Length: 238
Image 1: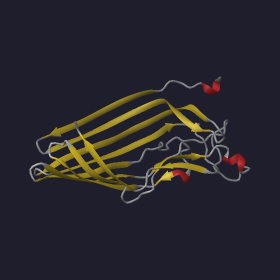
Image 2 (image 1 turned 135 degrees about the horizontal axis):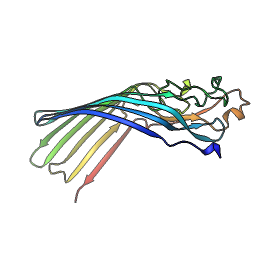
Image 3 (image 1 turned 60 degrees about the horizontal axis):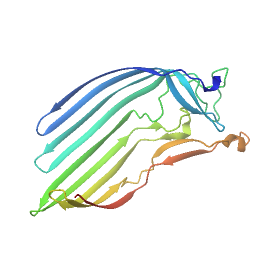
Image 4 (image 1 turned 45 degrees about the horizontal axis):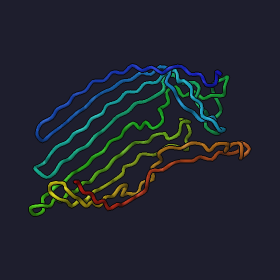
């Protein structure tokens, strides 16, 4: 019974922000600070199971900002930027990656205190430009160019596994559309990940991998985001 027992998770959160909006400009920025006690975590045991346990403490803090500005009647620029600091301040029951000797006994655990959490890049954000222009009396041409970016982050719940980091990237997208000026119909050409970046969404060790290799190696699996894709979209509003 003790294997499936874990304590409730609690958090104290503080947030402060500022917003400003005028006819052509909108800006917002906020700071947040969250302290977790008994943060519930899910770790792969290296065999066939996933275990829920409690990291004693974790701290999340960061700053987020976004802005939109209109230039004339046809162009709008927008963007956002986020800084994130998400670390475990006390977790001594982390799963050790293959080839790393446990440093916490008993239980053969690894100490993750001070380690950045999964899917927690230090920097992330996006920028975009939207252009819209009437064509004749009844049509409208629209163009959007955008990019999102992220710094390096861990994709595996085994946090100190050096083989499962996603390196920093920038991904570009675009959308070109022609439609009715009253938005009754539209035909659009959409491109996503146009620079064809290979981005890991999540990863982990394969079940029983070390057993099948006689503990001489390990195999990892990963799910990747879509590569470059282009689509034609048609829409009608009734």
